[in-house]
Length: 176
Image 1 (cartoon, rainbow, N blue to C red):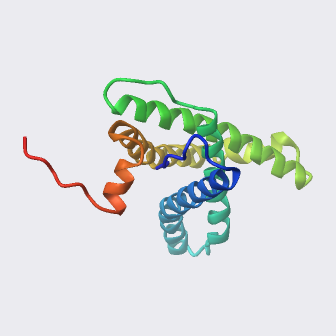
Image 2: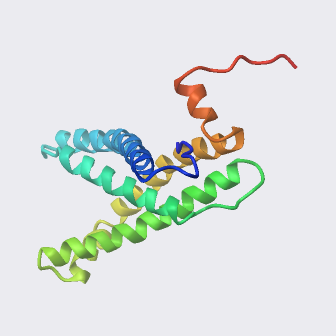
Image 3: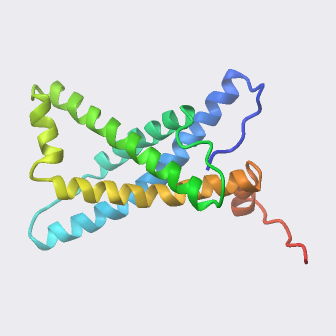
């Protein structure tokens, strides 16, 4: 959902743009991941287990949003042409791989900060919780596809046009 910043933008304009992008992406991730957390909390509640990591969800959304913006700066998934489905899937899968790698690194660092070995930290992701981890990655792919579909469609229509059509004013349709 990136909006165009002028090529000669000042540092303050670029910083404002980046913060705006970070906040929009964080909100999107928090809402989508929050829905998954709500389902998980409901299922665990029926089993008598209390689970409500809402504060953790916003931090996770913020970290993932920052990772995505870093990947955007690295131009991950750029350069694909053809029908819009292909650049959308290319970007979604590329960013999913980036998020998987960065999440693994994050888990290892958090484990080290808590005086746990890297193997022990990653064992939480890939050991007994492997199915949960893989399901989480599948959900993340399903979250990324609409986000990048919006971006790819916006690029195809002309940067910023789709955002204007969605949130400001839809342009009148011209008869064929």
